Length: 157
Image 1: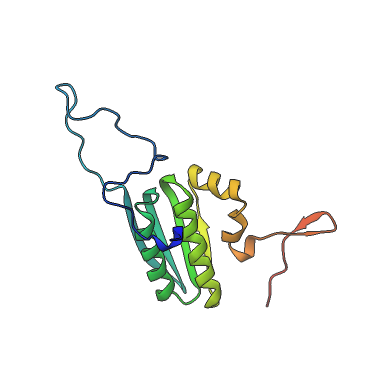
Image 2: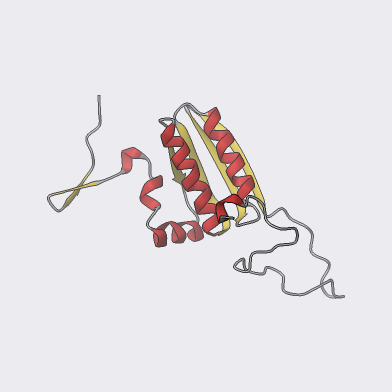
């Protein structure tokens, strides 16, 4: 079985790489029991011919399938592609990156694009370390090297 064949984690699985937010087990007299907050929230809206998907929370092995589903739905509903707003992502691992890369491959197959808007620090770090950040920049902000200089590409009429 390949890793990509697995779409959902085993029940009770918790990523060993996700930071523990509350190390204490059970309530104590001085601390009330923690309330169960969702670790992932997604929302989307139409912006012209593009769909914007806003992701908040933690994206890891457990939540990546939900992120992938939201992104694929947005891609199908868009004319030109998807912008992913990741400013409120607190945790991001390779599962989130793989969801973006799969979406990009599907988008390109349909003549669409995927851009990342306002990545949080953790997202920016993963994109930077993996060298994938340029894949998710808007086409009009890409710069090409010409004779050792960076220039903005000419706009098309």
